[in-house]
Image (cartoon, rainbow, N blue to C red; front, top):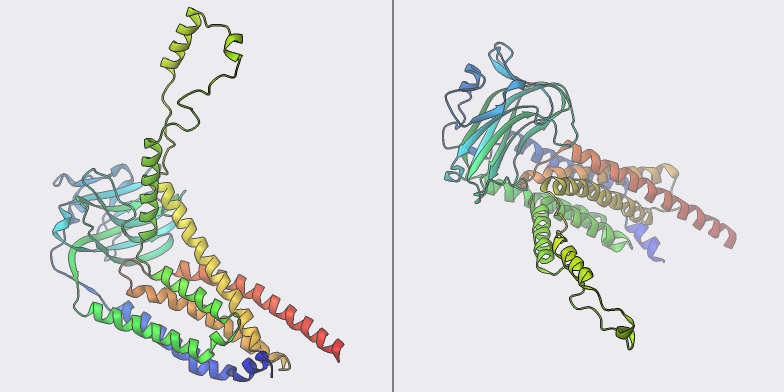
Length: 438
């Protein structure tokens, strides 16, 4: 009996795969998402630090010097708020667009801030960059006044049209923070943004939060391992590749946000320092010695030529070091690399998974049976993509995103299509070879 026949006999039926692997995994993922959607992991321990009532009373507010903004594009509206009361309307425009900023002094008195605000948007479209939309964010500056954009700072970033909804997120206070800056901004290319009741409250994690995080992370891992053992992927030639690919995806998604960008910035600083310390490349410090007889053949330079050479040398500007990559461009590259790496990894997962599943399909089975197995495999891949997004609920610096799920699903669809096509081609060629031998 060949190895393929052993794999086919040991493979579970589609009904067994559905009831004993996919269904329990889907139920656990749904319960996990429902729990974290209703559970509030942080509790407030102080009053609101943003006097939002002041911007309702006048633009610009005169009572507090910590208010800043692009006030020409900020307009109070008396009865358009979420409860029929006053709110602010932020219009798009050149530069930062309509923007309201409040500066928080000495933010390191606290470890976490719970940022909440009511938002409403109408026909907001993305600007030149992906983050040029309607947004609320809280970032921090160090002692030199430099903002650190690699530290998590986004509260909400939305586009399109949505009625009033509550935006809420928790931002950790870093050790370098000297001032905190709350931004409420309409950075979109077009559209209108209404906002009201923005608050920044000191908070701390609940005592039960670490327990729930560890419990759901362990449950997620146990469920994934159960499916791996149930399907016996390691028995197939490409099964180990599928397992390794999935492990790489999980590690990448659970890595704290900003780690890769911070490492890239440190490498850029190191390269800049080395470039400035080394002498200018391509300029020899000592000219090569002349060949034999060449010195006598050369005419001695005149005094005017020597003075002209000295003047030219003294006037030549020093070599400038190559400019470093700006933080904004680095973030753009990192976002692009993150998105493409997600798509590539999930495309590879779909490709190798289809090849691995083709090993367990009996070639003599009816066509409908083979299609069921491939369909269950594709459903399992999509379930894995959704489960990895739900897993980010247990991360302190990441969160699930529908956009990432659709990007990952697109990568799976491309890879699974290529893998299924290659598997079908191999099946057809093997059948022809079997018929010729017969």
